[in-house]
Image (tube, rainbow, N blue to C red; front, side, top):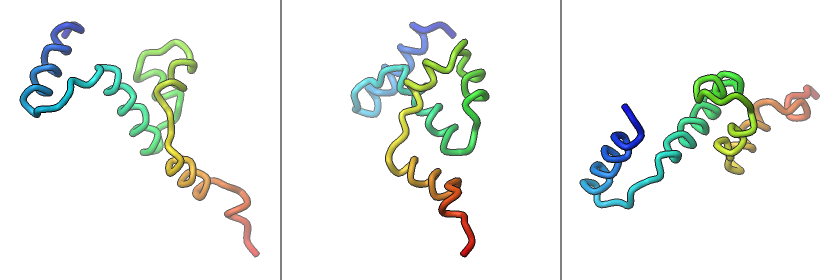
Length: 83
């Protein structure tokens, strides 16, 4: 499928749903952040998106404060110390 065809499908779906047409890159952003939240590594996401460098991944992977808190709680050495 080519870009214009995909744009037309998204436009029609948005019209039927009665919402503003989302930018197509919003789907790439949603994919990236959900892959991160589900534990995928950055290298894997980079390859799935087809990017040659990590620079563009950083644009898509804008984490929320809650995302950062959750990862910190899971991985922080200070939080995992035994008394």
